[in-house]
Image 1 (cartoon, one colour):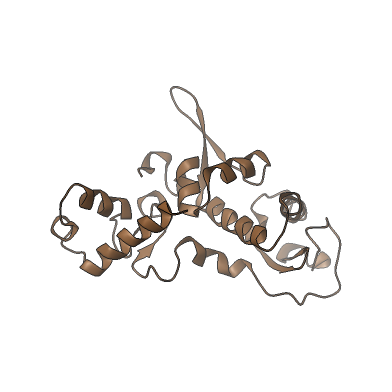
Image 2 (image 1 turned 120 degrees about the vertical axis):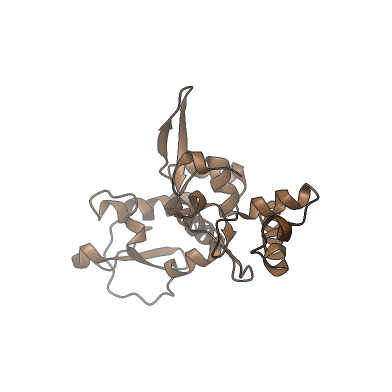
Length: 209
């Protein structure tokens, strides 16, 4: 999984889908529905779509909202409303505080206090009260579940590829070493057997998506 050529914290579509742990068909459908906002990378042969670490978090948000029963159209309306209320910034949802309840996505936007809170999934409708559980703060934890205590994703390390915490050794480096018949702790003596096993388990977790 070599995505270094895409720049710091940028991912090809298939890599972004894999790390965010969704099926590539779902990724394509959400991209087609304009839920995601890729950048364009020009190469000698063509132009490729690339995705950021923020897009990984956005994918997890979409997953959570889908799990709570929201339709793609409702999610898009909510994201579009938050963007519109923040000078058409597609990443404004990152600065908003998001709440959910049955059939309703609510947002509070720091730079539009005159409109807080808004019923984002219904368009720019102002609400009198928010009492729903907060959602947005949980998203980062979903990229690497807490059970993988030695794994982290940092867009500033190895272009955001999953690595062993505190190192630049990717989980893919570990799994490829094992597949070649070598002991990763000999190739990477700074690693413990527990870290190696965590990397192996994490790669299996990704493959199971």
